[in-house]
Amino acid sequence: MLHKSATILALAGLLGILLAIPAGAEGHYWELGVGYYQGIASDDPTDEARFDWAVLSESNSGISPEWIRNHLNRNLELNPKQKYMVELTPLNHLGRPERYLMQATIFEYHFKPGVREEILKRLRDTIRMILTNIAQPENVYGFSMLEEIPGNFGAGDQIAWAADPDKVPPILEEFRTEVEQETGRPLVWDDETRLWVGRIFAQAMEDIHRTIREAAPDKKIIYWHHGGYTYLDERGEMPGLPADAPLRSQGLYPCKWSDIVKPGLVDALMGWPEHPERFQRTFRLAERFKLPCFFQVSHPSIMRLNRWEETLANAKTKHSLNLGYFFYCEGNCNRGAWNDDPSFPADPAFNVGSATIPDHVRRFCAQENVGTEIVARYLAPRVSAQIPLSKARPGAVVPLDVLLHNPATPQYFTDPQEAVARNVEVTLSLPRGCRPWRGRATRCSARCTP
Image (cartoon, rainbow, N blue to C red; front, side, top):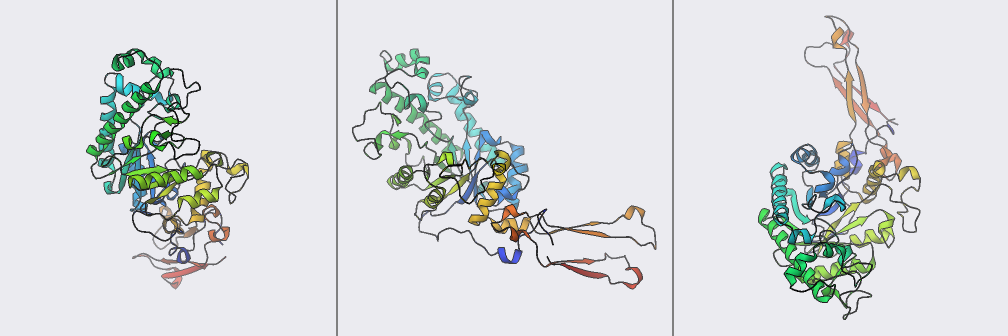
């Protein structure tokens, strides 16, 4: 009986299992499928390779030529069909020290000499580096400028979520002289200044999207919006935001979707299925701009305002513009909350953090039948032999020890019994030039049955 130290998927029974998702629809439905957010701290390459696609964060994964060749290309060997969306992060160490990673904002981009040029150069250099070193550049689906815009880059926390919506935000105070010179009037935080901020933000995003398009003309450009912000052309569409909502309204960023999602510069949208209103909003915007979208399925209950089953069902919605979703996990996803994933153990030992991300990933993938055929190939029983040839002499008997190792564990399955390798048969044959001892057979087989 081969059990938990490593046990195999029953190959014959699992190789034919397909991804358990709704049947295909016309248009872009399920072009990406089920992906993951890069950062699975695991020694098992199938934890990543089994997915249809991946979101790669330039900052979080430390993308480099060596990382691509040693890590990403290894995944492609296991799954040559895997696709990638790369989140570009060209802002680091160009802003103030107190900001996360010293990231620049639109104000450094707009006012500080050399910052705009450096950001656009970094975009070109990173795209070139990725497409040059990845084994299959055709598998790069596309690129996004950061994630959660305009919270990032647009200084959204100060522009749209200020504690005092009538007070000049600190970041504008920092650039007061430059703002007053450009606008030609004293700096006050009124509608005119807000609309000016929206214009420089939209122009910066257009510059960035054009640069990505020039560097990778055959790749998709994804706009990854932060669900906590609304734009001016959403007034009258979102609850609590009437058509005549003032520009000082909380969460309202002073530009329009049509200023950002321009034809030829944005090819897909990022969406959120964890809240009914945001979920409906995603498809509303996708339909308005005739762009496909994908979703982030957040496993941590603290990141959702609906039940886990509802989040997953939303992300699988059969819609012609639904590309698929990616699974986001932090390893401590169950917090004893009403919307925890009920299928996952509440044991704190399985909700530690990054160390338990693989446990969550494997259970989720087993439940959703994600990449089971890849895992089946990788977790096939392995045979190792120990032959002490250093002490062998002509005519002497050389003992042979054979170990059959089963690398699968119950973590990979919904039913732990599936982690048992059943009816495994090993056949050994003597190599040319070797004789069996005392007329024994040159070929023998052994079967292991639990």
